[in-house]
Length: 155
Image (cartoon, rainbow, N blue to C red):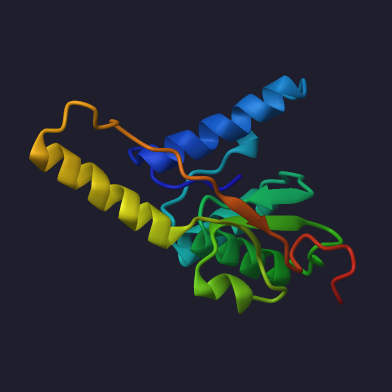
């Protein structure tokens, strides 16, 4: 897994969710399984290049956002690895870039419009000092499967 900045709430939430699900499956993620980054393409690429040079073995990578996952794809290509045959890659956000990578990136789609509407409602409720205003709202995401995880992807 290639994370984002530690101080970001979304980084902590994504990391926590990932670790929890692995723990439920009886799998403990070691420190070499979690690579810190900053949500940027070049940093993620460099981090994966270093992990490969250090002998870290993996067959899948979850990038905490799509630019991170795109950097992972670049590093894997440079290392001569075939995606998804050798390593599967998943990103998060479903930004436009995700459909233009090679192979196209499997990602978690966030409903941006609904998130904006919810944020506006929360802000208005706060300004109006509405006593029944919810402190937060969970908006469901969806998985968008593309070539970076598909076994039928041409390599």
